[in-house]
Amino acid sequence: METLSPGEVIAVPASLSVSLNLNFGELPVGVPSAYAAGPGFLYEYGGGGTSSVQVAWIGLRLTPLGAYRLMGVSLADVAGHVVDLAEVFGTSGRVLAERCQAARSHRERFALVDAFLLSRSAQGLWPSAEVVRSWQLLSRSAGRARIAELAADVGWSGDHLGRVFRRQMGLPPKSAARLMRLMSLLACVDAERKRWPELAADHGYSDQSHFIREMREFTGLTPSEYLCRLRPCGCLGSAQGPPGRSGRSARDASDSFKTEEAVRS
Image (cartoon, rainbow, N blue to C red):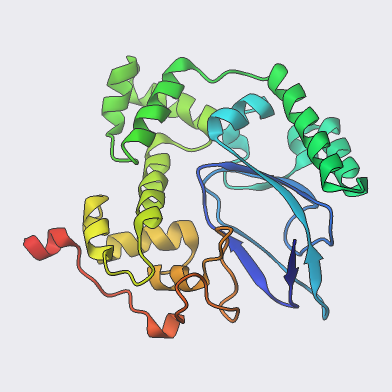
């Protein structure tokens, strides 16, 4: 549960996962009461009006492999969108949202969600073995594997892999690789950013502008802004809100650095 002040905006950075969120508190501005957020999508929600909003969610983060099985639809249809749960799951999605809102306890809500997931999983689709293999190889390399190598490994052409991968995982292989690389880097960065040049080079960023472009696309922020606004849940608070884990304000931070690769050259 969280309290949003009037006008406060929470940003959810792009992710490889598919989010399923069911609200049983007050409804924030910008999202339906129950929704799915596709992979690779940066979106926002916030408080509105003149009073605070008490927001309470049950949130699930599904891997694309799991989401494809549960949803039974092309993940390309939900990528880049926030979609009402009823549009994804039909009547069963609407009923789940209504029952979670009416439930009197977390235990009851969790039981409803568990039963729903088990039912959907029993009748869902399996992603192709070739896509599963490509996803695993891409994940192990933190997004550094070449798409042509993935296609050759599974015996498909690059174009065919791209089409099927996007349909079942929601993102083209190259976009998934870029996001994997950025997420891998952000999982390693220290609060004072002392290792950023080394990490940027280790993760294949050619220079400062390359890294910052990727940050802006997937988080909406520069690296220093991201660290200042990052919350423990992984969401990003408003600029006027309290600082995140770094304890520093954006004004005290700098995005100027050179990668180790650039220093050596």
